[in-house]
Amino acid sequence: MDQISDRYSAVVVHKLSMISIIGNLFLSAFKLFAGIFGRSGAMISDAVHSLSDVLATFIAWLGVRVSQKEADASHPYGHERFECVASLVLSVILAVTGVEIGKAGLEKILSGQASALEIPRAIALVAAVVSILCKEAMYRYTIHYARKIHSPAFEADAWHHRSDALSSIGSLIGIGGAMLGLPILDPIASVIICLFIFKVAYDIMKDALDRMLDTSGGDEYDQKLMDFIARQPDVLGVDVLHSRLFGSKVYVDLEIEVDGSLTLRDAHAVAEAVHSAVEQEFPEIKHIMIHVNPA
Image 1 (cartoon, rainbow, N blue to C red):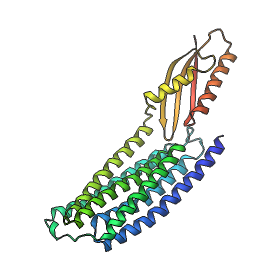
Image 2 (image 1 turned 90 degrees about the vertical axis):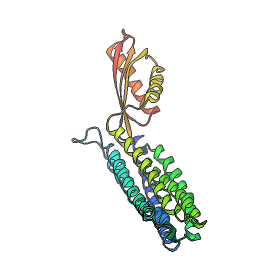
Image 3 (image 1 turned 90 degrees about the horizontal axis):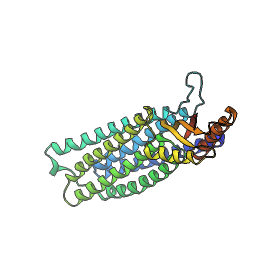
Image 4 (image 1 turned 135 degrees about the horizontal axis):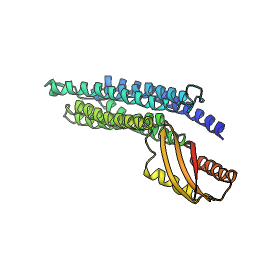
């Protein structure tokens, strides 16, 4: 089952990476062309943001590939946290991209030459619409499969696509406003794009840190898991349940109550049955350690 799952994940990761890299290369080239010939600083900023997605996808791919390595003597719990490292790097790339875009917009606004800014052309407006549609489609496709294979790195990459779609909405507003006679809206759009990017970078960084610091799966997740275990045959109660995130996986420490008159062999069989049932029902759980208490 694990081999099939790993093979499926590898295929999905390769497909997501290729679609993202090729799509972003074409899209960033088109937006850069539209930004230069359409005289739009916001669209040029948007093109740079799309180009950064290529590097982001490569980092996500690298993080996932390393995280799928088998456990070894130096890493007996596996390499899943390398995905978290990839997500942290992605958040930093996003933040730096945001700084550069915001800086360029602020310089134009504070220069006092807003009225002298060139009016964007229609091609820049078309590029913004195309970008919104393409990046939103890439977000939905990537987030769907990232959640299917439980990959935080590719979830971060998906949000990279969504942030690009949001930034293109800002570009659309800024370019449209500038074409209506308010050229100052173009650099203002760049600053708004910057704020969107910072928010996404913060969310990705927080999630990655949570997964690196043994954060719990959350009350709702733990309760769902506890209810499932309590329904298993011969389990008379759940005394303790602790979950902790470990990269894209979850580890669980559990104490259950069984009939105190059972032999050690029978009590062990109950624990083994619970172990198998939990890992079958919750594929994101890599291992569950079970301690048996007499009821």
